[in-house]
Amino acid sequence: MSSAEGLKLSVVIPAYNERGSIEEIIRRVKGVGVAHEIIIVDDCSTDGTRDYLAAVDDALVKVFFHDRNQGKGAALRTALSSVTGDIIIIQDADLEYDPQDYCRLIKPIQDGKADVVYGSRFAGGELHRVVFFWHMIGNKLLTFLSNMLTNLNLTDMETGYKAFSRSLLSRFTIEENRFGFEPEFTAKVAKMDVRIFEVGISYSGRSYKEGKKINWKDGFSALRCIVKYNLFTPASR
Image 1: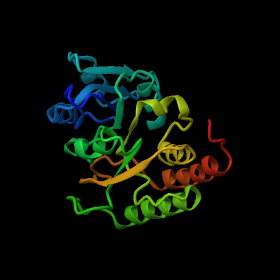
Image 2: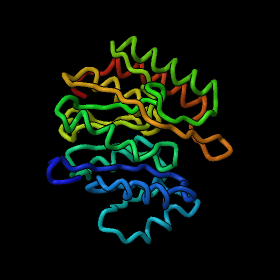
Image 3: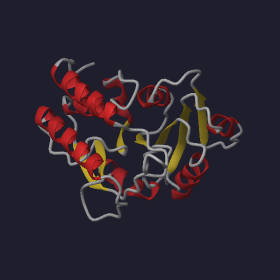
């Protein structure tokens, strides 16, 4: 990020068995030219991702390894403990989310208008790959239930693209190890006195044959997290 803009961007990437895309996503993130650092946490991959990352020699890229598979939330805990930038973007290791959207995501924070920005797959007229109807319905249902308890009007609570100021890290901890991070994070920031924005992003969803990992069990886990972190967890935790 240029010195004129002042704020430095940290991109954090949790990775598990993404050998087919990890090299390309690193190339795309670097190609945008705004990242101060790229922090990757390999969550004990078994498909060659770990070996590839161990050989990465790049001053911009910091890699951490888990000795056992723990989940996306656990990988994010590890990554977020090491960030040095002023703004953080969570980037999945697959190619569903396009780093070309970074400038759109961070602009409300740079302009001093927002503390948290959600990249919505369902807002705006950006490019979308057509994949699963019921997956979309599940996402919208979870967003609706989350909105009921947070009193937010998000269109895509489950989005993988979330940008936020580093200053928020001292105000919450990630407790969920798997994909429950999304509703947990949303519930916790909703209880803070912060400004939350949402911008439309492009999206190229994968099929399960192509390696998509979220399934119906994760949907039930997300529902549990919506209830737990909105109704039974203090704002400061």
